Amino acid sequence: MANTAFLGTGLLGAALAEAAAQRGDTVSAWNRTADKASALARFGIRAAATPADAVRGATRVHLVLRDDEVVDEVLALARPSLAPDAIVLDHTTTLPAKTAERATRLNAAGVSYLHCPVFMGPAAARASQGAMMVSGPRTLFDRVQADLSRMTGRLDYLGERPDLAAVNKICGNTLIIGLAGIVADVIAQAAERGIDPQAALGFLGKLDANGMIARRGQSAASNNFTPTFELTMARKDVGLMIETAGTRPLAVLSGLATRMDALISQGHGAKDLAALSIDSIKAP
Image (cartoon, helix red, strand yellow):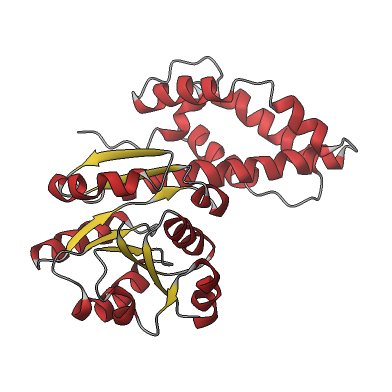
């Protein structure tokens, strides 16, 4: 099995390292907070004192870090000890522009680097479930495809453009976080009216959310704003939503109302609700 290193052992990094050890990999781990790495000793994982110590002899180096700045800092510390055949697999959610620059710079310098962000929580990581996306040189992906497939329920290679997985990760997180905000606002409205939030959310489960996203998303992406739900009528409903919530804090609806008001004042009120994206897609 592989000799692997994990740099960053927070909730996700620790779960990925644990799963690798359970599969039989030889695993070393480093974390800025040393106790988080040493806590993995019960799985046979060696806690390293430094990033350089962790990657020494490893052929697969997994990064599960906070942000771009930390990725660059930790990689700089690890690089002197990287084995010539090591491949750096970066699972960190990072800014696409910085990801592209980093990937181009590192691969040009002889460091084999792939960006591999994931959609999975700790439980899914331990069970090798969830999804992973990869972008970067195809030759590198071919070398690690079998290893990565063992880590996840779905593995998607998106191509050689180095920032493509980063863009898709940010877009996916936008949906996840946006939905969490909408759920919070639904709960606020239900609670204000004395309705059990569980019951309110149970009703939402009867709606075809995937179909709604597909239909309105296609309209927005193709700049087709032929109305089926006029923006002015949607804005009226948003007002009702805000009033229904009373004084309870709202995560999304207030900002949405502001955006709708701006578009209506620009003359877009008779267009479809999808016109919320009218300024988002630049003309070719």
